[in-house]
Length: 415
Image (cartoon, rainbow, N blue to C red):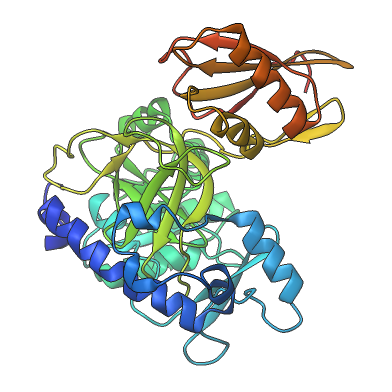
């Protein structure tokens, strides 16, 4: 389990960073030249100048809702809202649909979604039979995993979802080496196997995704002879990060550039602070530049004990879209960031909404070394101007606010 999928996993961090930053201008140019959406979004950008993380951070973040809005607006002419650089035909054997609906293209490259790396880290090897219980219809999850398994040299049984008893029968008769799918469905399968008194001794490993995978469930699988590992990816981007035998966070994939930004903004946060995952993919067919996933995470310090040298993240820590309705009006994380940006004395800010039905209260908690009442008064004025709502201000010492990525905390006694 400490062997590596390829030499990239142990390359010197400085070399990896140089390679990623060297590839970035080419991807920016590709996006501007061949994607109608990014031709507009990046119209005033010189691709050659975007060759560092600092330069990348100056570009706008494109969030999932914006991608969906463009797709909906252009659906009559372009199913992908102008984000894809290719059209229907031999270069795009499949197109998928995620909830929204949002349409995603699949190209023809082997391991198109880059899942082989995660499967390898979970113990899958050439010659294995993989029982794939991700869905094969509408969403790309089944195809994503099958592509990766084939790239490793595995045979795949496309089990899909449902029909638990038939899944157990297929496993008993085909004897797969591993399972691919959600952790909850694997538990259902193992529970059904126990109910049927059907041993599944061949099943010793699993790559799990799309749901939370708590240590308690991981231990439950281990007790039944299955070593489960998780990976994190999206239908838009493919693999983003994967778990290793060290069980310490998730290691980033080698072909994405990941930033952690303050929710509601595009501003990178200090290492270790929780924020929104923003990903730039090097996929030339679907060149998403600074794509806001809407998921919270944080960078883990140090390197993976397995010897993999890429950056690690803590995994999924919640959702970044904390838009909240207060007194009948929506308040967005971006508004909180806009208020804080007006005052250089403000280090961090968190809007806490409390109260009961028809009695909402807003308190803006602000980390600052300045304690003057004048600052609090000016912040109250800014709250009213930006949100059109009244709010109180609480000045607190730097480091006081929780490191959980929340910009808006809904602490009301009703939902």
